[in-house]
Length: 126
Image (cartoon, one colour):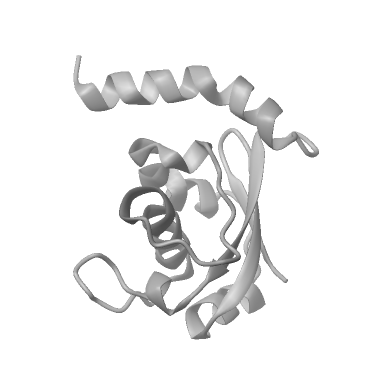
């Protein structure tokens, strides 16, 4: 068994506790608010991201991996796991993100609210 597989298994076992700690809402297993800042619009190699999903994923990598935390960034337990961050794009493809909110995320600095469900996420700009 690989270390990544074991880490993913441990993260999935921790989901019920993480969901309880973050306050389950309408079937979600967690939620967080974040500021999508200029730093989140660039990947680790300094390349500008042009996709809202990639920007949201970079925000979580900045918070959990790189220690780049904006004042309005909330913490979530789910995306602290690198395997879960890797699944974010798939989760959003079956989740909810309006076209207007996607344009706002790609275009500038916005605040978002993210509800995390077992297999999807819902992102709203506010």
